[in-house]
Image (cartoon, rainbow over all chains, first blue to last red; front, side, top):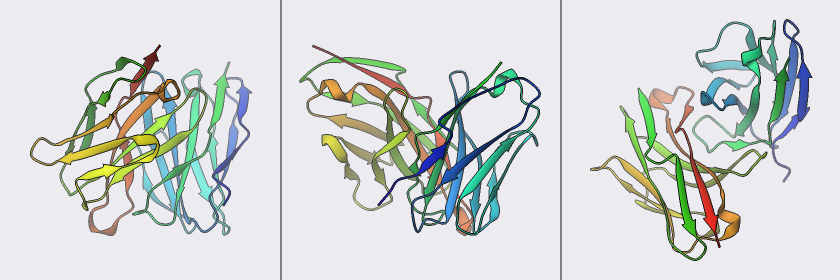
Length: 112
Length: 116
């Protein structure tokens, strides 16, 4: 069974731009969660989607948004990028919110 | 509220010697606890998980962890370290009260260095 895939793997943007990251969960998994990893703040929860609905949200500004499609694939969007948004963005999927989460390789975003 | 404290930011061991990575947790509900490992420039890989069954949990690659409720600890151990174990290890707590969506709370990580 294929694992969680994330595209693109690397991305360079400039301040003020917006970016969209994509996550394809493991087949049969309906829950997708997003996390931000930075050296200073560590791993922080962004949000979780299940059956196209956001069920849980972390403490991030409204510039961070996401959505989930009917095939469970999810996208995360960050608008008006700031230097501090440079991070590794990880996506994780699970069959349901009570199940173990499996992580993708991440998208490394660099904001210049 | 839930939280996780990894007591050591960096641990160095010699190859072939035991590994101990310490983790304490705090949770208002019965938690699920996990250890994940992250190799350089890679995503997170699940090592093992505790979900209120046996208190001694065996994971992949020879790792195991013991849940001690009285000490609120979930330390990760391995009898004999291998060079390939060098990585960052995260202790994670998950709480899902009342059937609401759960979210993972990560510790700050412990970097394991294995020397010859």
